[in-house]
Every structure is written in C-alpha cells, then in structure tokens.
View 1: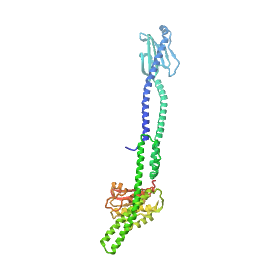
View 2: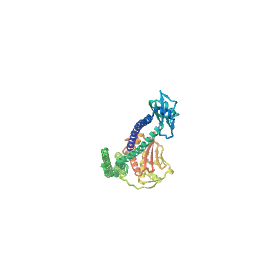
View 3: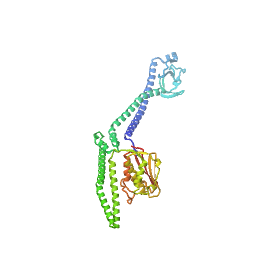
View 4: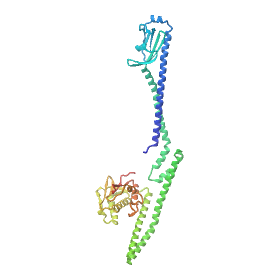
Length: 453
C-alpha cells in the first residue's frame, strides 16, 4: 500500500459521508416535497371548482342560461387559476356557450373528463379538475410550469442553506482534526528534526508530555520512545566500546610490534632465516591490526563529532599528496591512474577528512579491481568520479558495501571499515557517497559535493 496521510483520508472520508448522506436526504426531501405540493395544489384546484359551483347553484339554472352572456375575467396574472363555467342538458353543451371563463384559459376545458387530469395544449402542459353537478360544470386548471417554478424556488431556498451548512461543517471538521492531530504532528516533528543529532532528539522526546497524546495511540508512542532510547543507548555503548577497546589496545600492540621488530633484528644478526620470516609475518599482522585500531578510533571520533571545521581545498594538491602517500603500498601508482587534472575544482571540506576519504577509495580500487586497466579519476557537475574497470560488485554486494566490517571475501585484506568511514565523513559535510557497478563489471565511486543538508 502506498503512503497516505491519515488526516487527509479522515477528512475526505467524513466529507464524502456527509455529502452522500445529504444527497440522499435532499433527494428524499425533493420527492416528498413534490408529492405534498402537488397534493396541496390539487386540493386548491378542487376547492376553487367547488366554491364557484356553490356560488352559482344559488341562482336558477334557466335564468342563468337565458340571461347570461359569456363573461371574461380581465385579470391576466400567471399564478391565477384558469376557470370555465358551463351548463349541460342531457350531457350536451347548450349552443356551445360558456357562462364565464378567465382570460388565458385553454379552449378545450369543456371537453375534460370529470376529476383530475393532466394534458397538453399548444405545447403547454395543464393540470385540471372538473366538477359536475346536475347541468352545471365547473373546470379549474393551472399550468404545470407554474408548479415546477414554485417547486424550484422552494428547493433553492432549502438548498442554499444546506450547501452553506455543508461547507461550514467541512471547515469545522478540518479545524477539529487539525487540533486533535497537533500532538501527533509535534512528536513527528521532533523525530524528523535534527535527525543527524540524536542527542537533541532524545532530549526533546524525553521532555514531551505524553498526556497530550490520545489514549488509542499512547501505548504505541510510549513504546516507540522507549525503543528509541534503548537504541540510542546501545549505539552509544557500541561507540564507547569501540573507542575504548581501540585506545586500550593501541599501547600493548605498539609494544608487541616493537618487541617483534627487535627480535627480527636479533634474528637477522644471528642469521636465522626461518625465524626472520616468521617474525616478518608477525610484524605484518601487527601492522594490519594497528591499522584496524586507528580506523576504529577515527570512526568513533567522527561519529561523535558534530561541529567540524571546513576550508577551501585545492583538489589537485590534495590528490597529489594522497598519491605520494599511497606509493608506499603501490610504487607504480601513477601508471595505474588516469587523472583529468583540468576537471578539478575547489572543494569546501576538512583537508584531513577528504584526504582520508580519497586514500581509502583509491586504495580499495588498487587492491580489488583485479585488472591492468587504469583507474579513471575526474570531476563533472561538482561530482568526483573514481572509476575502475575490474570485477565490480553485484547488486546485493553494492547494498552491503557500505556496511561496517563487510568484505567481499574473507580472503581479502582489509577490515571492511574504509567505505563506512568515507560515508560518515562525507555526511558530516552534507555530501553524498554512491557506488555504481554496471552489469557487475567495474566499480564507480561517486562523491557528490552538491550540499544536500
């Protein structure tokens, strides 16, 4: 599952639920209102027809038929009911006469069936009610369009407050969720702020008031804080142990090396060649472990050092110094390097730290490339490339290459600390360290001097 924001999903879920419920409520309201309004307006039509019939029934029918002339109401208001009054004899209209009719009433009212009906005349839809009592017939009618307009106006008067209330509710939901999520956001900010300074993170977390955390996630947060504290304590113990062990072993190892060298000199004078060879191997092993102790000390000091000095470094001068230093282990080093001196630019970093980084990387390439092809060193886009064309590393080995004490095979010389030390030193200055190996052939070390932090 992809990462998502719990707060955004919660707001979206509640808002969608609100909208869905209110749409259903509005649909129900519309259907119910339409039904009730039609019933009410139909009752008005029926009441109008009955009222007119009661009034006319007070006069003798023959008198009205003989003396009445067709009368037309002069009013022409669109919300009035159209009405037509006529007399029948044996269900036949007398002379097709109309006693009274409102202005704008449809012509075919006299032919409508008794009761309610809906019909069209000249494209206009009408709703009518026919009341017949003896020879008297009263027809009341109104345009369906007027009903629709009235229904639309009523729905608008309901919909606008409904929409305004919906917007207000969503705004309140956003505000409430923001307020309730504030403690969680605060502790998240403490975890990601100053991530390179665990001392500050642990101190801020220890001062955080857990009572402000919701009960549902309080056990989770408490366990996280306890886990962070234990991990930090374990890491500090590991660093302290590495530094202490390396420091305590330095003096005894130096004394042993001195005694071995002295014994080798005595053996050489006594011409014991076998003993000389044995002591020489012992001296090499001691030198190797001295180098391991020095790297452990440097690694421990680098991890504990937070504020470091930097200076503008001429990369050409520094690389020449590194090459001179490596001549002791690889006399033919200059022939094995292909350096683009013109591509180098000035770098802001500690001279000692960058020298150690380049020394470790170039030494690794010289030892492990296993090829006679030259190692290419050049800069491009403020990135330093150190590329060999040897056996390279597999994708799995690339992931492990920066781990402490990792070596490709147990038969290789070294201690697996060089690349880890390079990463830590570069990270202190906000630089990145990457390894690339195309199809398992050759290894390219890329130091990106574009500051990332």
